[in-house]
Picture 1: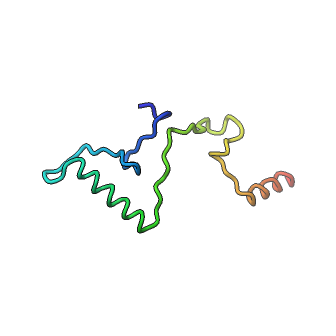
Picture 2: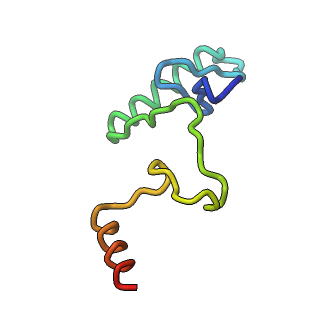
Picture 3: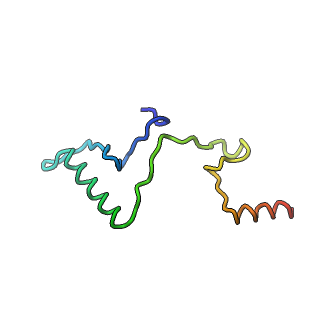
Length: 92
């Protein structure tokens, strides 16, 4: 599977794409998936927890800072912190 093009889920898929590779004497693979999905949906709804959106692999900066400025999706700075950093640079 090419993870740069395909999103895959390890613990579950909110769209019902999860597959079980185990079963019991009393529950089939499909029944386990149905029950698992039901419990997860119910708990998430009651606790107000949203599913994390999943997407195909996103490129990440792995040069240990050697490439210069880090992309905005990696290094995020609040407006207040950015203003403080700019002030510090001007003072030094």
